[in-house]
Length: 140
Image 1: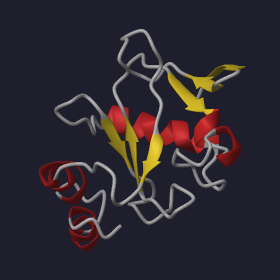
Image 2: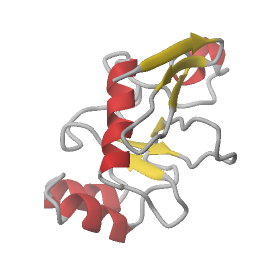
Image 3: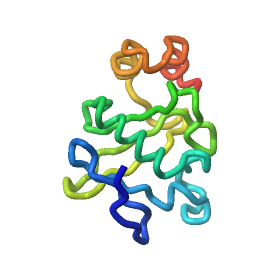
């Protein structure tokens, strides 16, 4: 893991093995900086762990047809967000030169497709079949 620098928006990491940079944003770390409108990483998920989840998604190409990456940690057994979210999203940056960032997803938010969950996580034993069913049904 390489921390490049810290600046006003957060902590910049990278590059990944594929050359991507990642910005752990402050506003996904503190309720006061979001006005309560953004999902927050669980305090037990360090910025280093956040970056490692992104690196795993990048390395294993957990990317959907829109170019967004999706992430889980510890076979989706570990809560990533302050509201017990177990999936996170890393939206593809609008500008190619910008760093990536990510955040935990609520069950009512956009989710990875059923096919994605099966192909990348269930069929490769990243998560159990039971966990896959819960994710697909939006139960967690």
